[in-house]
Length: 360
Image (tube, rainbow, N blue to C red; front, side, top):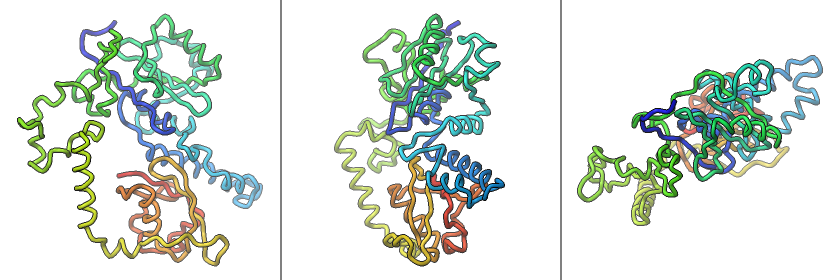
């Protein structure tokens, strides 16, 4: 039975090839998973698989299978940021203690009516999307759609069957998912531009409202008569405005302020010491390779000298990540490398390792 309370539907839209991340976030109705976090899970799974292969009785780390796997790279995330079902399953279990079985698994879809299942993850080739029950209605939350689309109870079974006939694998959540959003505090768990007012979706309004458009959103937040936030301390008023909603003048002011800040901040002694040199030639003495899972989910491989300090690795990743604050981990279980910045790569035993990065 539907409720008279106001509900909001969270629907992240496609960015790059991160549909696996969007599918999980749409399933749990919050911005809970990031590319960096999923990449870290992928790296952990890769390392577990490599450790298992290294312990076999057919050559260990010198076996053809092990060397082939090392050459091929990850089996859980590709260079475009597409994640495997095992990554999605592990991430969902780690964060919400929820399993994600295939609906065709014996004892799953044949034991329960499809309309009694609260959420689905669908996959074909490299595309993932979620279907989620919200306020007793099912919504197709495919990140390629402009807005959430309602699937009636009557059509749900036919929709799932049609997806399977079209080559989709359908996974489901049998346990309780996080509750749908019906309060202002719950909306803070997601990005404002992705919250859709359910009553607008039900009435098929062409100008359906997202939270970012909600005129009541800033009521009580201390707005001044000039439209700036009193929380900004008079320093320009742009700190709390999403970039997508700034005027061209506001974006120009923000860019100029950031540029001046970067110019006025001298490089520290440690930053200068970790300056990244040109990549050494392959096969040269003391040259090693390191694989990376970058914070944005992409993969990279680079050559370093064994004598290079670990701080140089931070300089490399930082250059690929627009100088944002990052955390790097390696080994299994993954350990933070920040305390080893002044140690050499050889001393830290990072030659041939997989290093996982995430934003902090």
